[in-house]
Length: 279
Image (cartoon, rainbow, N blue to C red; front, side, top):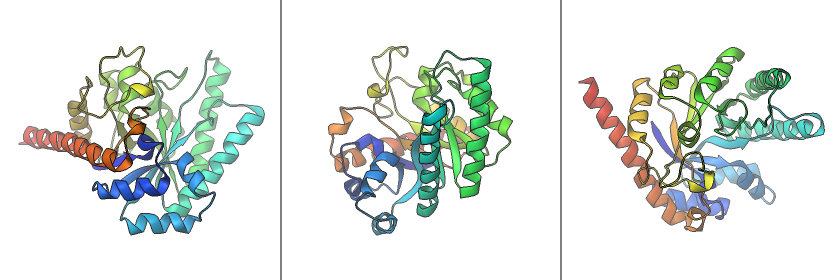
């Protein structure tokens, strides 16, 4: 498993500072935050992004996130899908392999809504395949549909699309209705990306993105789960993603150093236990 940092964790930092400061903290891969990237591109060219990444020897294998695709209708749907297609082209131009799609489905839910979501998911996968970009469906703990790992993997399998997989966000895994036995549905083939964080002193029913903290500082049992991912030979990226306003106040340079230390420790412990268990 390969470590990465999500740019949203330093939301108040500029795109350029993220790249330089993360690199200074020995980060070699980032999860792009598309809103920040698009702001940068208002005054720069795509080639500037490629040059910046190359200068600091940072890969950008994943971009986050696209919402509004699955359940929207009418003008809202047209707007979301137009934005989505532009982002697919941007990912292709930058060599971004995976675009995360949020399962942001509001309730109440009808059978017609379910069918619409399934149709939209298949359509999105087809568009991604044309752009040669993978889509990672991220289940959302508070979503009316696709709020757990089992449903996410089932709908991915139902499409039969090789360019569609799952983004496992451990915040949504632990705070939603997912169960440990749902992990059996994951494989190296359908797991496209993993996001980690932690939670401390907050009831899971009340937890929000703003409560995310660095992995290893809270109550989540992260190490056994990452050991399991190792057992299915997942060798993709694992990123720290913190949408915490308090963390946003931390300079990108300081965050990069602290976060990479926490992530390497976590991945190293999982690797050591996996090795010990195989002997």
